[in-house]
Length: 513
Image (cartoon, rainbow, N blue to C red; front, side, top):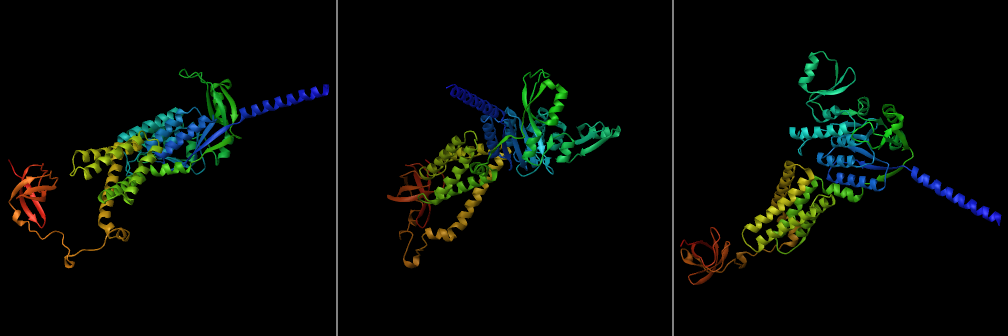
């Protein structure tokens, strides 16, 4: 009996130990999220990255690594990504895996740490317009200020990032090793004064750093050839910020072993505490799904303009032909892809804008089929459609000129396609299968109108029995005739006069009272 009790106690003790060990293991497990930035920066990419950061926060990740290999992209999308990185409490590392150009450099600079592979490049962040031309001074000034404040926030040399944006600067290294920017007049004044300087980037050039240069200038923190090597170098530390009067709370950061030791020397060993190593961390990749790639594709400016043009062409062809067929279906499909892609991209009010577009289209159809002519309904419908599309483009760029450019591209492309369809589509073999090709000629006894001669009605007067918009019916010489106006709209019961007759076409004008 006693031995059974001892066995029970031993079992309970072992179970308790297992629970404690498993709890300690769970606490010691380090989780790192990896988010790829390996395509051109656009609205879809910014949405995907924000979702990845949210996922990492929900999983209580210890660090986020952004795997960067991008030629750049839209500045407004990069700004959204930078704000999302700066807003998260999770320490971030930019792993420049080959190139971080333009918007990619800005995103990397927003991270707490920057790591580069050998042979990588970072920089060349001058803004350009949609045609690839240099942006205005206003745009350059805004990006320069945004990039500088980001660098200052992460304790990086802000003069280096300014040289990446503004080619009107000299970037020089002084004898004491300091790297500073100089405007041309400042540079030449220092040169005349005999100041010893090494020019790192001359006026007229944009700064792009190699891995070696970035390390030498202190712009990046370390070098690693792969993710495993990167993780092995980093530690999670807690830094006591008592030395900063504006922030007395301790913060969690990721630092290399050497950087952490430097911080301990700077602040004191009691203010920098090692918590965990990333070396054996569990790595979770936030994968770019097929849905994400679809959104990237649909929301790119080129594809958006093409979808809008094809949708407009399909609806235009459908309006000009009776019934509802393939052109109308394809038109609605392309328009749906245009607005649906931007809804998935979380463009504000994209669904409402799509509804606004449909209302505008309905007003134009009403004007064409129910209210002949082109009046208030048609103009209002056109305005609603243009406003909804412009707002989508504007949300994608945050720049009025660029939004107007892509809207203009869509309108011009739609017009060109419509002209092409009008000229060449009726002659194409697929169209001929659906069109009636039988010709009824006068040689076979077919006539477009009766044999009645209407020439005798020239000069005679009568009364419009229906509104003439411009076609309608009038009673002339006690006969009911189909007529058209040669001028403006003529109201019902207005006296009219026949001006000319061409075959069965009788043209009239309103008589002045």
